[in-house]
Length: 68
Length: 266
Image (cartoon, rainbow over all chains, first blue to last red; front, side, top):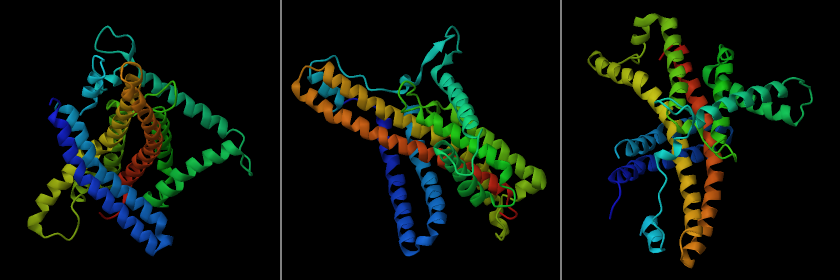
């Protein structure tokens, strides 16, 4: 076996954000299903939360290339 | 079994997976540490394209819009109404619409150049470009906050009101890190990371498929190259979605940070 263990680190760092993004969009779908007229406001909040959560995975990706 | 081992079993000399080096494209002037590179050229082309297209699209405005005017108005309306007015508020959002619209169009076109044939280079896949865009936002929201409250008032306003006294230094320290480090770094890294990773993924599928089809001498791998190219096409479509989303999110966050500095209370 050969390769770079930093890639494993990226894989680990993607678990948390993966779950987090799932939770955010689950809450968004729930919110729109309960109150369809709030869609516009919820969409902004959902994408905002998505962006903030996704940043963690992006950190992992950047670091896996930094520490090769 | 890894892709490289599969390819080696097929009789070739091994597949070279794409890495960071696929982003280094000097065009001319490579004598020293400085060179005019491909992303710089793509960025200049994108600025010219945006200027020409927007000038032509808004030259003859009609009450009943044509196709071009409708597209332009849809893009402008998205930034003006659903980003700027919604987040900054109807009192002083108009000042920031030119900035936000510039961000949106520039990032969107540069991202789309990642999949448009003959360009096929996402400019924001080099960290320098998103870093500069993020630094402009960084300077603007600090400038607005300090201009509004003065330096001391601005720093004091970082602490949310109504906290017990002993916890204030810790919260102040955390907020300081958020405002001065986390915000600009995540803003730049998010755009960079998405474009970088997406481009590497596309290059991996396309060059991997090409390698399996042309350079391996086993029928199995040559058949396997068809779904690999198929994945390349699917990922290209996914990339287009991500490119729109990232342009939208960058503009959204820029507006949010500016709004945070303009707001009356924390």
